Amino acid sequence: MRILIADDHRLIVEGVKLKLGELGPDTEFVVAMDKAELRETIHSPEAAALSLALIDLAMPGAQGNEHLTEMIEQLPHVPLIVLSGSEDPSLMKSLLAMGVQGFIPKAYSPDVMLSAVRLVLSGGVYVPPLLLQEHVDGAGTTPASPAASAQSAFSDSLEERLRKLLTERQIDVLRLLSQGKPNKLIARDLGISEGTVKIHLAAIFRALNVRNRVEAVVASRRISGL
Image (cartoon, rainbow, N blue to C red):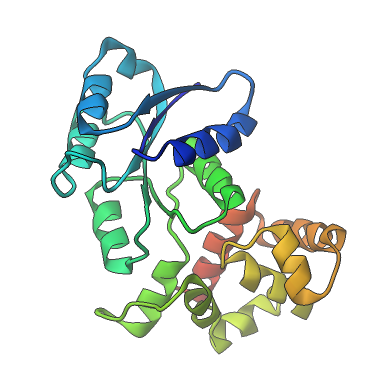
């Protein structure tokens, strides 16, 4: 499997490569540091072998979203995930509407990124939990933070429906999970061990009939009717 990573920050590139290496020993990476390198890559004969592309929204030399549009038009068979420092729901919606398969804010944890990538590789679309708040508050309202977005996403109606499937503690774990928190921080916030968090997560996955963290958040959104 060959993955394209396009970002002008070497530390981010190396961090993404390190985490996505967990996908398997056969995972290979192609790196582009600016728009010129990205264009050269997507127009090369080797581009046909790409399995996935993760591209920074703000690539040096790019004007707006033109580099993303070019990627989609040139390689429509390659799933595209956008990496960005922005957490603007309206931006996320516009990019998902134009055909990207995922939007990952750079503030999210490496584990969330890995789960999102697995979801996209399996044919799904990763929608950040932040979009839940934008839906609840209506057009033109932007959440202040991922934590605030996830908290509001768990409305009374949603919690009532989840209580039919999950325990109170499991709902607490799911709420923190929707904020993009890793097991260690979930355990700290709830005053339980990481092992207990894993047990709760396994129970949540079974109850919601999902395979991973990202799918659990998406499933909770569907239960809410959003």
